[in-house]
Image (tube, rainbow over all chains, first blue to last red; front, side, top):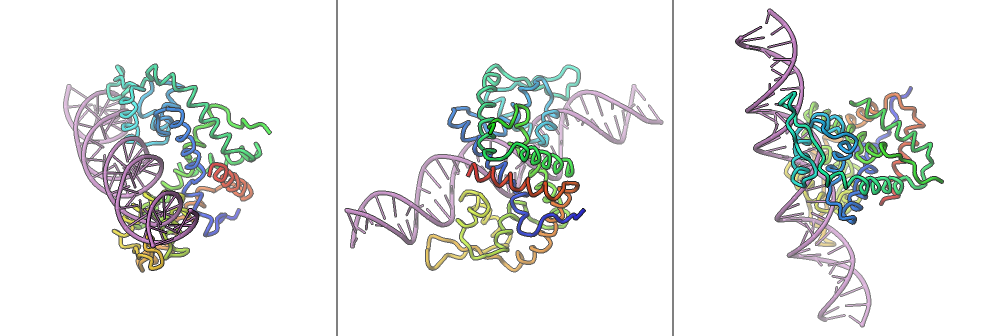
Length: 146
Length: 146
DNA sequence: TTCGAATAGTTGTTTAACTAACTATATGCC
DNA sequence: GGCATATAGTTAGTTAAACAACTATTCGAA
Protein backbone atom coordinates (compact mmCIF):
# COMPACT_ATOMS: atom_id res chain seq x y z
CA UNK A 1 0.00 0.00 0.00
CA UNK A 2 1.38 3.42 -0.86
CA UNK A 3 2.31 5.10 2.36
CA UNK A 4 2.42 8.58 0.90
CA UNK A 5 -1.19 9.61 0.83
CA UNK A 6 -0.61 13.31 1.43
CA UNK A 7 0.96 15.66 -1.04
CA UNK A 8 2.62 18.81 0.16
CA UNK A 9 -0.05 21.47 0.36
CA UNK A 10 -2.66 19.16 1.80
CA UNK A 11 -1.07 18.72 5.18
CA UNK A 12 -2.30 21.80 6.84
CA UNK A 13 -5.91 21.30 7.78
CA UNK A 14 -5.40 17.73 8.92
CA UNK A 15 -2.70 18.77 11.33
CA UNK A 16 -4.40 21.89 12.60
CA UNK A 17 -7.80 20.26 12.97
CA UNK A 18 -9.79 23.17 11.68
CA UNK A 19 -13.05 21.19 11.66
CA UNK A 20 -12.95 20.22 15.32
CA UNK A 21 -11.84 23.74 16.21
CA UNK A 22 -14.85 25.10 14.37
CA UNK A 23 -17.17 22.68 16.16
CA UNK A 24 -15.76 23.64 19.55
CA UNK A 25 -16.10 27.35 18.79
CA UNK A 26 -19.70 26.93 17.69
CA UNK A 27 -20.55 24.98 20.82
CA UNK A 28 -18.85 27.55 23.02
CA UNK A 29 -20.99 30.28 21.47
CA UNK A 30 -24.12 28.24 22.13
CA UNK A 31 -23.09 27.81 25.77
CA UNK A 32 -22.54 31.55 26.09
CA UNK A 33 -25.88 32.40 24.48
CA UNK A 34 -27.64 29.95 26.79
CA UNK A 35 -25.98 31.55 29.84
CA UNK A 36 -24.18 28.28 30.49
CA UNK A 37 -21.06 29.57 32.17
CA UNK A 38 -18.80 26.75 30.98
CA UNK A 39 -15.78 26.41 28.76
CA UNK A 40 -15.67 23.53 26.28
CA UNK A 41 -12.79 22.04 28.23
CA UNK A 42 -14.75 22.18 31.48
CA UNK A 43 -17.73 20.65 29.67
CA UNK A 44 -15.53 17.84 28.39
CA UNK A 45 -14.63 16.94 31.97
CA UNK A 46 -18.24 17.09 33.14
CA UNK A 47 -19.18 14.94 30.13
CA UNK A 48 -17.29 12.02 31.64
CA UNK A 49 -18.43 12.72 35.19
CA UNK A 50 -22.06 12.65 34.06
CA UNK A 51 -21.47 9.10 32.90
CA UNK A 52 -19.79 8.20 36.20
CA UNK A 53 -18.59 10.40 39.01
CA UNK A 54 -16.49 9.52 42.00
CA UNK A 55 -13.57 8.76 39.71
CA UNK A 56 -9.99 9.86 40.20
CA UNK A 57 -8.19 12.67 38.44
CA UNK A 58 -6.02 10.08 36.73
CA UNK A 59 -9.11 8.43 35.29
CA UNK A 60 -10.21 11.83 34.03
CA UNK A 61 -6.79 12.24 32.39
CA UNK A 62 -7.30 8.99 30.50
CA UNK A 63 -10.88 9.75 29.54
CA UNK A 64 -10.19 13.26 28.27
CA UNK A 65 -6.74 12.64 26.72
CA UNK A 66 -5.20 15.31 28.93
CA UNK A 67 -2.14 15.27 31.16
CA UNK A 68 -2.23 15.56 34.92
CA UNK A 69 -1.48 19.27 35.26
CA UNK A 70 -4.28 20.07 32.82
CA UNK A 71 -6.78 18.07 34.86
CA UNK A 72 -5.53 19.61 38.10
CA UNK A 73 -6.30 23.08 36.75
CA UNK A 74 -9.61 22.11 35.17
CA UNK A 75 -10.74 20.56 38.44
CA UNK A 76 -9.49 23.68 40.27
CA UNK A 77 -11.67 25.84 38.07
CA UNK A 78 -14.66 23.51 38.25
CA UNK A 79 -14.34 23.57 42.04
CA UNK A 80 -14.30 27.37 42.01
CA UNK A 81 -17.51 27.24 39.99
CA UNK A 82 -18.90 24.84 42.61
CA UNK A 83 -19.55 22.18 39.99
CA UNK A 84 -17.33 19.45 41.42
CA UNK A 85 -15.80 18.46 44.75
CA UNK A 86 -12.52 16.73 45.43
CA UNK A 87 -12.86 14.00 48.07
CA UNK A 88 -9.72 12.23 49.28
CA UNK A 89 -9.98 8.49 48.78
CA UNK A 90 -9.90 6.44 51.95
CA UNK A 91 -8.38 3.42 50.24
CA UNK A 92 -5.53 5.31 48.65
CA UNK A 93 -4.76 8.64 50.15
CA UNK A 94 -2.89 9.79 47.06
CA UNK A 95 -6.12 9.94 45.10
CA UNK A 96 -8.82 12.57 44.84
CA UNK A 97 -12.20 11.25 43.87
CA UNK A 98 -14.15 13.83 41.91
CA UNK A 99 -17.86 14.21 42.58
CA UNK A 100 -20.45 16.34 40.82
CA UNK A 101 -22.50 18.86 42.75
CA UNK A 102 -26.26 19.13 42.22
CA UNK A 103 -25.69 22.30 40.16
CA UNK A 104 -23.48 20.37 37.77
CA UNK A 105 -26.11 17.65 37.37
CA UNK A 106 -28.62 20.29 36.40
CA UNK A 107 -26.43 21.37 33.49
CA UNK A 108 -26.23 17.99 31.83
CA UNK A 109 -29.38 17.95 29.79
CA UNK A 110 -29.19 21.47 28.37
CA UNK A 111 -25.50 21.22 27.48
CA UNK A 112 -25.83 17.83 25.84
CA UNK A 113 -28.69 19.11 23.73
CA UNK A 114 -26.53 22.00 22.56
CA UNK A 115 -23.72 19.60 21.75
CA UNK A 116 -25.98 17.38 19.66
CA UNK A 117 -27.44 20.41 17.94
CA UNK A 118 -23.94 21.62 17.10
CA UNK A 119 -22.93 18.29 15.61
CA UNK A 120 -26.09 18.11 13.56
CA UNK A 121 -25.38 21.57 12.18
CA UNK A 122 -21.80 20.55 11.49
CA UNK A 123 -22.82 17.41 9.63
CA UNK A 124 -25.64 18.88 7.59
CA UNK A 125 -25.43 17.49 4.08
CA UNK A 126 -23.00 14.70 4.97
CA UNK A 127 -24.36 11.21 4.23
CA UNK A 128 -24.51 9.00 7.31
CA UNK A 129 -22.20 6.37 5.84
CA UNK A 130 -19.52 8.99 5.22
CA UNK A 131 -19.83 10.16 8.81
CA UNK A 132 -19.18 6.58 9.90
CA UNK A 133 -16.13 6.28 7.66
CA UNK A 134 -14.80 9.57 8.98
CA UNK A 135 -15.28 8.51 12.60
CA UNK A 136 -13.49 5.22 11.88
CA UNK A 137 -10.57 6.96 10.16
CA UNK A 138 -10.12 9.39 13.04
CA UNK A 139 -10.17 6.51 15.50
CA UNK A 140 -7.46 4.69 13.56
CA UNK A 141 -5.38 7.87 13.43
CA UNK A 142 -5.68 8.21 17.16
CA UNK A 143 -4.77 4.57 17.76
CA UNK A 144 -1.82 4.79 15.38
CA UNK A 145 -0.30 7.65 17.35
CA UNK A 146 -1.27 6.67 20.88
CA UNK B 1 -32.43 12.86 5.55
CA UNK B 2 -32.26 12.11 9.26
CA UNK B 3 -30.50 14.98 10.89
CA UNK B 4 -29.65 13.10 14.04
CA UNK B 5 -26.55 11.19 13.10
CA UNK B 6 -24.94 11.27 16.53
CA UNK B 7 -26.18 9.40 19.56
CA UNK B 8 -25.33 10.61 22.99
CA UNK B 9 -22.05 9.05 23.95
CA UNK B 10 -20.50 9.51 20.54
CA UNK B 11 -20.19 13.25 20.70
CA UNK B 12 -17.02 13.51 22.61
CA UNK B 13 -14.16 12.74 20.29
CA UNK B 14 -15.63 14.65 17.39
CA UNK B 15 -15.93 17.79 19.46
CA UNK B 16 -12.60 17.50 21.19
CA UNK B 17 -10.70 16.56 18.05
CA UNK B 18 -8.55 13.92 19.65
CA UNK B 19 -7.13 12.78 16.31
CA UNK B 20 -5.82 16.18 15.25
CA UNK B 21 -4.52 16.76 18.77
CA UNK B 22 -2.63 13.50 18.59
CA UNK B 23 -1.17 14.42 15.19
CA UNK B 24 -0.05 17.81 16.47
CA UNK B 25 1.52 16.29 19.57
CA UNK B 26 3.42 13.72 17.50
CA UNK B 27 4.70 16.39 15.15
CA UNK B 28 5.76 18.60 18.06
CA UNK B 29 7.81 15.74 19.47
CA UNK B 30 9.50 15.23 16.10
CA UNK B 31 10.35 18.93 15.97
CA UNK B 32 11.85 18.75 19.45
CA UNK B 33 13.88 15.63 18.64
CA UNK B 34 15.17 17.28 15.48
CA UNK B 35 16.24 20.38 17.44
CA UNK B 36 13.75 22.42 15.45
CA UNK B 37 12.90 25.06 17.99
CA UNK B 38 9.34 25.66 16.75
CA UNK B 39 5.86 25.21 18.14
CA UNK B 40 3.22 23.67 15.88
CA UNK B 41 1.38 26.98 15.86
CA UNK B 42 4.50 28.84 14.77
CA UNK B 43 5.08 26.19 12.10
CA UNK B 44 1.52 26.66 10.86
CA UNK B 45 2.24 30.34 10.24
CA UNK B 46 5.54 29.62 8.51
CA UNK B 47 3.73 26.99 6.41
CA UNK B 48 1.75 29.74 4.71
CA UNK B 49 4.68 32.13 4.48
CA UNK B 50 6.74 29.46 2.71
CA UNK B 51 4.10 29.41 0.02
CA UNK B 52 4.12 33.21 -0.21
CA UNK B 53 5.65 35.79 2.07
CA UNK B 54 5.20 39.53 2.12
CA UNK B 55 1.55 39.05 3.08
CA UNK B 56 -0.33 40.96 5.76
CA UNK B 57 -1.23 39.75 9.22
CA UNK B 58 -4.88 39.77 8.17
CA UNK B 59 -4.08 37.38 5.33
CA UNK B 60 -2.34 35.14 7.84
CA UNK B 61 -5.47 35.26 9.99
CA UNK B 62 -7.55 34.01 7.08
CA UNK B 63 -5.05 31.35 6.06
CA UNK B 64 -4.58 29.92 9.54
CA UNK B 65 -8.17 30.33 10.82
CA UNK B 66 -6.96 32.43 13.73
CA UNK B 67 -8.10 35.80 15.04
CA UNK B 68 -6.03 38.94 14.92
CA UNK B 69 -4.67 38.90 18.46
CA UNK B 70 -3.49 35.32 17.99
CA UNK B 71 -1.56 36.29 14.86
CA UNK B 72 -0.15 39.39 16.54
CA UNK B 73 1.32 37.22 19.28
CA UNK B 74 2.53 34.48 16.98
CA UNK B 75 4.29 37.05 14.80
CA UNK B 76 5.72 38.61 17.96
CA UNK B 77 7.22 35.28 18.94
CA UNK B 78 8.43 34.48 15.43
CA UNK B 79 10.12 37.88 15.35
CA UNK B 80 11.83 37.16 18.67
CA UNK B 81 13.10 33.92 17.12
CA UNK B 82 14.32 36.01 14.15
CA UNK B 83 12.26 33.93 11.73
CA UNK B 84 10.09 36.74 10.34
CA UNK B 85 10.19 40.51 9.97
CA UNK B 86 7.32 42.97 10.06
CA UNK B 87 7.62 45.61 7.32
CA UNK B 88 5.11 48.46 7.25
CA UNK B 89 3.32 48.62 3.92
CA UNK B 90 3.89 51.79 1.93
CA UNK B 91 0.53 51.60 0.19
CA UNK B 92 -1.51 51.18 3.38
CA UNK B 93 0.21 52.22 6.53
CA UNK B 94 -2.14 50.19 8.68
CA UNK B 95 -0.67 46.98 7.34
CA UNK B 96 2.40 44.99 8.31
CA UNK B 97 3.76 42.82 5.58
CA UNK B 98 5.41 39.73 7.02
CA UNK B 99 8.64 38.48 5.46
CA UNK B 100 10.65 35.36 6.15
CA UNK B 101 14.27 35.56 7.20
CA UNK B 102 16.88 33.31 5.62
CA UNK B 103 16.90 31.20 8.80
CA UNK B 104 13.19 30.52 8.40
CA UNK B 105 13.65 29.47 4.79
CA UNK B 106 16.23 26.96 5.89
CA UNK B 107 13.70 25.25 8.14
CA UNK B 108 11.14 24.56 5.42
CA UNK B 109 12.42 21.33 4.00
CA UNK B 110 13.19 19.53 7.24
CA UNK B 111 9.95 20.53 8.93
CA UNK B 112 7.77 19.61 5.95
CA UNK B 113 9.41 16.21 5.82
CA UNK B 114 8.59 15.66 9.47
CA UNK B 115 5.00 16.75 8.85
CA UNK B 116 4.58 14.32 5.97
CA UNK B 117 6.18 11.57 7.99
CA UNK B 118 3.76 12.26 10.85
CA UNK B 119 0.74 12.09 8.56
CA UNK B 120 1.94 8.88 7.02
CA UNK B 121 2.32 7.36 10.47
CA UNK B 122 -1.12 8.65 11.41
CA UNK B 123 -2.77 7.19 8.32
CA UNK B 124 -1.05 3.81 8.35
CA UNK B 125 -3.61 1.16 7.50
CA UNK B 126 -6.25 3.60 6.26
CA UNK B 127 -7.22 3.01 2.62
CA UNK B 128 -6.62 6.05 0.41
CA UNK B 129 -10.27 6.37 -0.59
CA UNK B 130 -11.32 6.56 3.04
CA UNK B 131 -8.75 9.28 3.63
CA UNK B 132 -10.33 11.22 0.78
CA UNK B 133 -13.82 10.79 2.23
CA UNK B 134 -12.61 11.90 5.62
CA UNK B 135 -10.95 15.01 4.22
CA UNK B 136 -14.12 15.87 2.32
CA UNK B 137 -16.32 15.41 5.39
CA UNK B 138 -14.07 17.62 7.51
CA UNK B 139 -14.14 20.28 4.79
CA UNK B 140 -17.96 20.23 4.74
CA UNK B 141 -18.05 20.47 8.53
CA UNK B 142 -15.80 23.48 8.40
CA UNK B 143 -17.88 25.12 5.66
CA UNK B 144 -21.13 24.42 7.51
CA UNK B 145 -19.90 26.26 10.59
CA UNK B 146 -17.88 29.03 8.99
C1' DT C 1 -13.96 68.12 2.65
C1' DT C 2 -15.04 66.24 6.49
C1' DC C 3 -16.96 63.10 9.47
C1' DG C 4 -18.63 58.43 10.46
C1' DA C 5 -17.73 53.71 9.47
C1' DA C 6 -14.68 50.11 8.27
C1' DT C 7 -10.19 47.94 8.47
C1' DA C 8 -5.40 46.59 10.42
C1' DG C 9 -3.23 45.76 14.19
C1' DT C 10 -2.20 45.86 19.51
C1' DT C 11 -2.99 45.19 24.47
C1' DG C 12 -5.10 43.15 28.64
C1' DT C 13 -7.41 39.36 30.81
C1' DT C 14 -8.88 34.60 31.46
C1' DT C 15 -8.50 29.80 30.39
C1' DA C 16 -5.91 25.99 28.90
C1' DA C 17 -1.82 22.76 27.18
C1' DC C 18 2.70 21.10 27.80
C1' DT C 19 7.08 20.35 30.18
C1' DA C 20 9.80 19.86 34.18
C1' DA C 21 10.37 19.65 38.85
C1' DC C 22 8.27 18.78 42.94
C1' DT C 23 5.52 16.34 47.35
C1' DA C 24 3.13 12.59 49.29
C1' DT C 25 1.63 8.01 49.41
C1' DA C 26 1.78 3.18 48.08
C1' DT C 27 4.08 -1.06 46.42
C1' DG C 28 7.39 -4.57 46.11
C1' DC C 29 11.61 -6.70 46.58
C1' DC C 30 15.64 -7.91 49.43
C1' DG D 1 11.17 -3.95 58.13
C1' DG D 2 13.43 -0.75 55.02
C1' DC D 3 14.51 1.26 50.86
C1' DA D 4 14.00 1.86 45.80
C1' DT D 5 10.49 2.57 42.62
C1' DA D 6 6.09 3.68 40.90
C1' DT D 7 1.89 6.32 41.15
C1' DA D 8 -1.35 10.48 42.23
C1' DG D 9 -1.45 14.91 42.29
C1' DT D 10 0.47 19.96 42.52
C1' DT D 11 3.25 24.01 41.22
C1' DA D 12 5.91 27.00 38.13
C1' DG D 13 6.94 28.79 33.57
C1' DT D 14 6.11 29.35 28.59
C1' DT D 15 3.04 29.40 24.69
C1' DA D 16 -1.33 29.97 22.76
C1' DA D 17 -6.68 30.95 22.04
C1' DA D 18 -10.76 33.74 22.71
C1' DC D 19 -12.83 37.97 23.79
C1' DA D 20 -13.20 42.90 24.67
C1' DA D 21 -11.45 47.29 24.34
C1' DC D 22 -8.33 50.07 22.28
C1' DT D 23 -5.27 53.10 18.51
C1' DA D 24 -4.20 54.36 13.92
C1' DT D 25 -5.25 54.64 9.23
C1' DT D 26 -8.24 54.49 5.25
C1' DC D 27 -12.58 54.75 2.81
C1' DG D 28 -16.87 56.65 1.43
C1' DA D 29 -20.76 59.37 1.28
C1' DA D 30 -23.20 63.67 2.24
